[in-house]
Length: 543
Image (cartoon, rainbow, N blue to C red; front, side, top):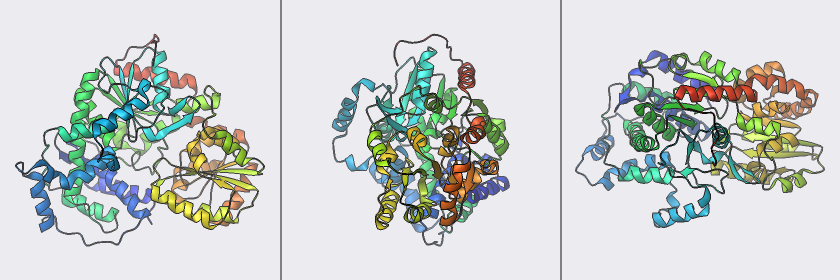
């Protein structure tokens, strides 16, 4: 199975050898979308292999019929949508299980559930729009705290800067600050908008087809599949363009710039001359497909790539420049710190939340607490289950799933855990309570390749990584001796014991350049506001 780094190298090689910066559809350059979506497909194929298939010529009968249905403007809209509906629903995260209920009634019920925290998605007079993902909310005593947007909202509020938060994916409540749930609104407006013609198959697609075949181990992404995603992004961008224009915002900050919907919002911001910013939400090291290996760029830059990368610290800013010749010329980097991490380490927010006391009681009496942060796509999952089965009964294991972990993968892991008939672990509460109390309660942190490695080190906790991806992401930290990489169950259990000898201060020192101090973060955020032409300096009454 190819690692993320091997897939990323394959992408970089193709980008170096082909004029990807000229690939255009509509009014924008489409290579970033093709690159990202193909990488996603490759990761899923690697985690759940499929038998290679013989790719069909692009002019085969099925593709020809599909393209005809998609292009003929006089066909009923519902017929043309049969082919694209899967891509559209995936991109805007529509919950298809609720489609049989009246949409209006369902929407009113959702709004009533957390009425005091609802905001209007087109509210005028806002300085900054923040586009974030609901899956990153963590349970605190006062509600579900969005760990990326909420600290920014609070900081901007103290500076007299008004914000509007757009929240995509599943609606979750009670929230701690106001936001506008936009997934359903976006889907509705895309459905109701005039049809956007599909782009014709370009000459460069044949090279892209060969590239996708190499990435996916034999399966070729058809032009119908690729152009369906291109059109979906185009449609969403037209909606976001209307919304942004109504808000009057001068800057849009997003989490996860390479998400299709976020790309659409970034494209809309570019058309309107609004500064777009990517807020760091995880590791950005060499080997991450979205943050490394960008070699080429068009003269005007990629319209779906943000203008500014707002990083946690010096290390990430330096690596973005080193690993991306194209980004160095297209986008700026500003160190804005990790405000949520700063709150946790300085105890300026209560770290207690729903379920914490029950979990603490469950951990009581064990000699060692081991926190395992699991990522999506299943890499390394067999490894830690064997360790739980073979490890001492006096160790307690906290299994924390990544928010993007697919349900079938969780169920597979839970089934394996039940087979080993152990009781010294927890995955339900460990996945729902705040991360930082888990770190503070743990003896060692284990991960496939999660960014929690950096956060754990910042709190003085060493890490064991159990995948090749983790070894590549954290090579510098492995060299410093605060992260240990293992490849067998025996090495894993031994490494957990060895972590006792790694001083907490050594861990904190190693992480220091990854997290800017609060005063540095404040200066960076004020610089960001100045670049966007947003005035600041006085507080406002309410968030």
